Length: 501
Image 1: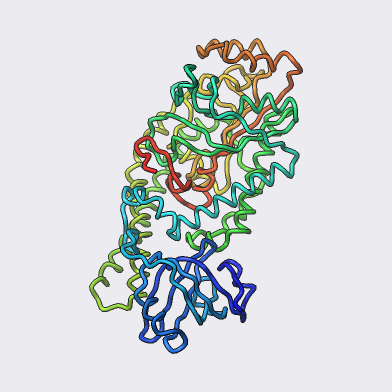
Image 2 (image 1 turned 120 degrees about the vertical axis):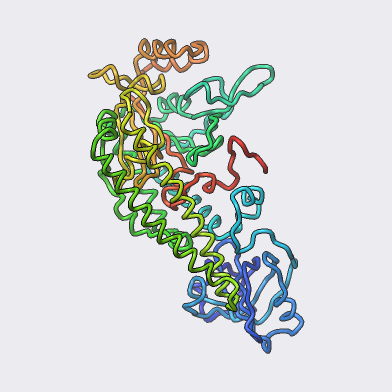
């Protein structure tokens, strides 16, 4: 009797008869032989169906089966290098659970709006499947690192009266007649918990009501936030380095199939090792205004145009074959490649359009402003490894960040920028531990002191140097997968102009 198995387990079952349950991803016919690609959530498997070796009625039904029909298949696992995963199933039986037709997401190219409207189905597509599994591994790797390094999980409130970031980006909520808002961060509560446990973290959704449509912004996103008592800025940087390296190396080791499906080269992750580059904010500002940056952006534009010409040429080559008598397998491969090439071309065109504006913004950068998305893109493109930017101007940062006692104009904070243009994935700081200074900053930013009485109280009873940071899950997934828009890095994105399901 065939044993029940999943596609991800087949490498250990060569020569054995197994039963798989899944959905039809794709199919093609070669006369008396059918080639069915079945997916079950763990991978793809080619199932070879010979007409003379299976019930004729079943063969006929399988031949006309529509994409995403559900079924079970039974057969012998054998090695086949040309098949997905290097294995295939020689079918001896099948049971169709539901026949479907008219599945809306086909191998042809679809627009962004169409795919977002069909997000509940788009999750089944190979690219989204791979991104989702990589995200799962990143989340698991983050939890493992923290759990193995003495951190205690503390679940912080989502409904809160205190603002952790700009008050302009709060989602307000009526809480039984009291005005609260959705949490921007769990950090303030973690500071209280760190005084109890020493090392703590929270992992959950955070919310920002920013009216932004950039590729780096969502209204709801997930963040993992460690907080540590008895720590200074340098120790925080070292913790962030080890944390990121652990996540990257675990994802590279455990998601080979998924990265391969995305066309990503995991060998580049070998470079992600300590120490990361370090710049102060002042050094970053000088770099942006420098001739080095002007020359770098000019060379970037040349490389972009070269890539554009190659990509456009390949698109034209494939399009020239359309209408020719090609095998269905070739047509499907061309359609899939066109989707990716057109996506890539759109990204290149956007980068070409943005290049002059980015150069202008960099040349005019003024000390005291926060780094913008284009500034982060420029700096991070200059490095193959993540880069720390530290000691930002106090005027540009949150009230809880500790002022550098050797330079009252800056705070002891950092952002970690992912390389090759992906920008900030971590923001963190040492927290102000002096009650009088903290109160002055709260009042300076015109926040309601009453809402922060408990937070100020932490500075009265055993205040110590402490700090932490938050890593954005979607931005980290985008960096490692090469996905340019973080809306693709969460199953059901929440954006300023779209909440469909």
